[in-house]
Length: 155
Image (cartoon, rainbow, N blue to C red; front, side, top):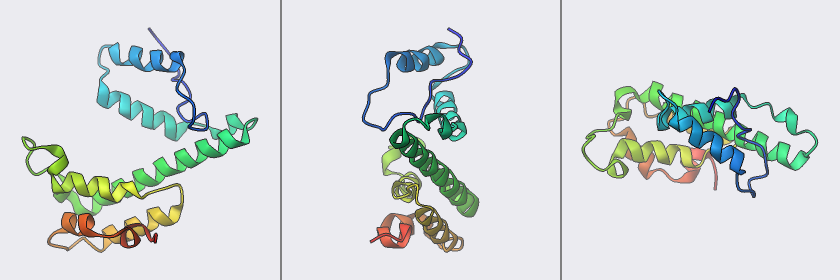
């Protein structure tokens, strides 16, 4: 099964289930040599970031929803880069043999991304919060303990 382009990853308003052709595409993609789950996630994200939302101009609601999803993803990518660039090796999983969900770095990465939306204010606030942690002895704890207002400038 060879496809040149993946199905549109951001189309629709979010209330519809992907069509069989979209599901078949990704299942087929996973079965190809040298393709795996990590590669699928990277391709999906790459396709979503490169998606031209203008092709949905005939459906303004779908276009706006796709643009919001794309902007949210861009904002999360930027915050994740700031997280890694600022905190470096402290973002690494402490014990790969331990449950991932209980690792402070994993928890902090999830926490810092959960409140990022298409609104650039959430992105900028999170990036600024991370910047304050550069010399913090326990940056993961600070993120995990922070309230939404501190992380995302939200109520």
